[in-house]
Length: 422
Figure 1 (cartoon, rainbow, N blue to C red):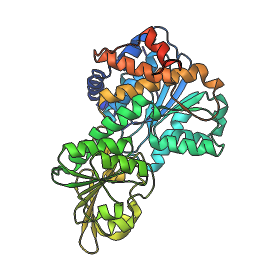
Figure 2 (spheres, rainbow, N blue to C red):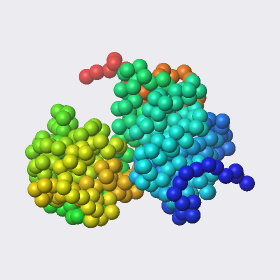
Figure 3 (cartoon, one colour):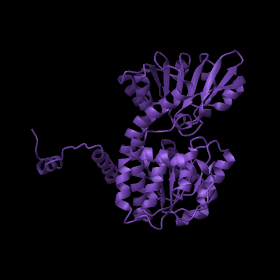
Figure 4 (cartoon, rainbow, N blue to C red):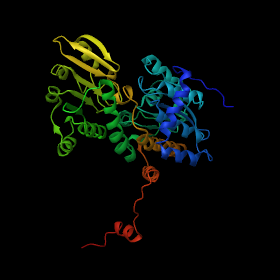
């Protein structure tokens, strides 16, 4: 009989529903299934305490299952107040006896209380989605640092924060930027965010995208994916950028590129994917069309200046779930989705399981790397080792029954030599 665990969730009676949905996601996560089969006997993470500040979704539940099967002592809290799937949180507690501290719609005070509950676990390794866990360790739980082996970070936003910490000499243990793995950002960010962000926008609004002017703010990997999917829906896609190379790439990918101030005047939809603050600001809101829909696909709700929107408005209502309609003094209405939080999780279910399979396989293998090598790593943000990235790609291809060629000995020698020429 497994021992019951501590938790703070919405409703334990939702556990059976959550278990069914976790199983549905598991069908698409064949790389994680293979890793579980590999590690369940050897238990390479036995004795390793892990605290994870992640989106509590069906996909995360399957990551947690694999880590526990590998022997880890795991506790989870939410990385966003609106992204928790309450039935999944209940299933993790009831059926897998993993402590979870997460409630969809939790207050800021609850959010940080839950983070500190996860840190009470005295983790040796942290798993972060936005760097709030690492930030809390460094700001108010510094006594934990001495026993830390390291951490992993899943998001672009979190990596930006961690690199800022490292550049100032403030980072006190090594962190692996899982977000920057090729098998993460090329697939999770592009295909995962591309599909799930559009899913969130459509679920929230039920507005036809075809024929609409759809502004994507930022043409990184997430922005590329969103633009691609919006274009597929028949929208007229416009890109705004501050990086000349990305703007040039967007142009050559067939999109119209212009400053956000000009784009705001013609937009039916504006979605941000930059990881920066107040990208959509008061000056943009003052020129937007009546009915313009604002959404954010970045991790934090700072990309749209919500206080400025509140100050401009004279009224606010919620005509649909996940839609706040603000009425301005001149009668124009601006619609903010999911309170400005990441729309793919707050208004939908997040990335498809098949793409999270690769991201979370990277997480598992990077945690193993930290468990064995963390003590020897510098206090810096480290890339995912190439051998891990390649292994995840190979495992994913095998799970999809796809075979590829291999180099011959002659070809390997040729590629490593400079002697042969014309």
